[in-house]
Length: 256
Image 1 (cartoon, rainbow, N blue to C red):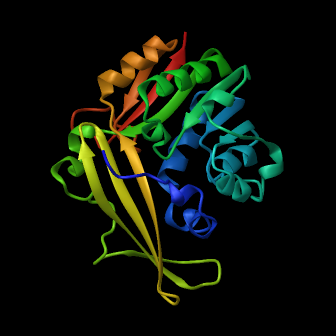
Image 2: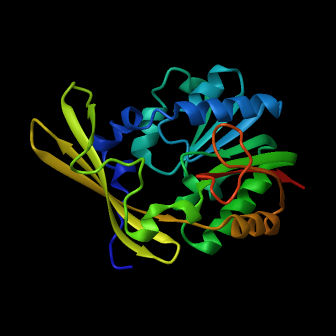
Image 3: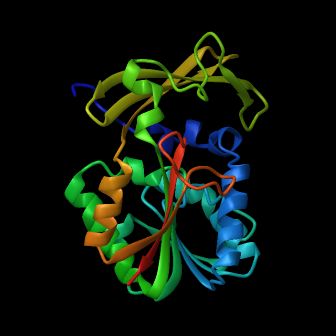
């Protein structure tokens, strides 16, 4: 691939401030909160905590929470949230995890797909395993590559286009148009550009991101190599079991 990624959506303060408006994650949050309840956990590690959308809700419900986030601009917002003082925050990636004896580790908002290098991905899984107590769970989601339109050079049906952008307001109430353009597809890797057009100033800021689409079998094998057994794979946020047509693979893996 020739495009240069910059992941500015996580590091540019002007567009990071829009993150919560563009990513309410209501259904996903409800799923993970219900799962934490079902698993009867007490200590949770949130890896790639972002602006703390889920992290702080877990803290509000009384869980002991550790939030780890590599992008400083995202972390700044997370640390200003209502329940941020109840969270142990770490600036870094999964390799910064310690032996926390946590009951549950989470990677939400498709964080797993941003772990591009295969060896780095395995190293992160091993570090997560080490941070959990025996029998603790790692839960995360990744998109099913078999049903993704990117591989036919089409944009994802859930993502807006330039002619049909999503419109949000910034902190000053000024309108921002947001849309996505796919750039390159190579094997199981996709590079795409996010556009943020500030209507009043006519300024456009972009973020070039890259995702990896590992298969269900690849991920299962990697989890097993890293000290986990897969207990369940859900196919969507409605708790349905994963199949070849599922939009998501939501892994529930247990440390053995």
